[in-house]
Image 1 (cartoon, rainbow, N blue to C red):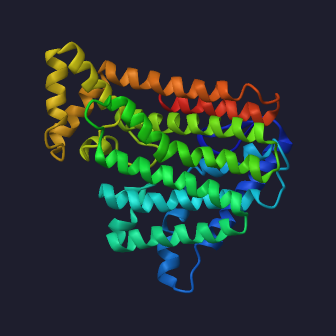
Image 2: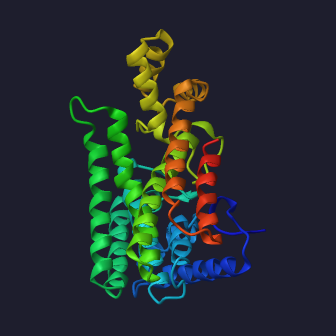
Length: 336
């Protein structure tokens, strides 16, 4: 058994491991090439998060999905570079909106430089992704454009909040489908498309990616509360401090509204207070870690991961399918 990719994913077939590792190495080289500029400062800013590392979750999915066709097809690696560049660009923008100071264990671009540099660097990465995408054909451009529209729509919906009468949990899951699920789904779709699989396989892998992407983000929500050292390099409780209502908080509020228990109502009031205060923030984290809402969020994560696994059923049994199934297990394991 060997190990490759995020979460210590084990790949039991040596040929598959070699393909995936070679592909991810090529993606890394492609990312560095795509983020070079004639202006040294732009290169430094654009490569800031590339060099900080990361799971390369989306390129890994491109490589595994391409195994159902020709994994050596010329569009596979460039499409993986496109999705990772797009993802990185959104991180630069997200950190500005969230006023984040740390990303992947290093200073965020907005903290190291300023908001303007971070926003413009994100735009630069989008432009480089588009340049590569143009060589992959009009269908690839259309797929990426639709996914990017969903991604931005999800971000806007998160900012706007649920409409009157809309269930906040349902709204939040829709937000995640756009913000995270869309680009993870495109990763699987590009791998299948670029490797020349038939449309049925493309659709199956796209559905898998959509569900896995939501499960992946829900696991992050749980980790933000439950872990002592967040895998992404973020400080635990970052979302709480910033007043972002992730799924554990939404499940708490749902329970408080339904049951009206004094301790639930009191915790909601604490969460609505100024959590930039370290003592209040620590108390909120302590109480949430012991609250049933966190376990409910874990169950939600498991449900989406199981839906992702079930979506793979029509695919033939092979080592690539086994690896995709194991990713479902790894996401659940991250959530505890």
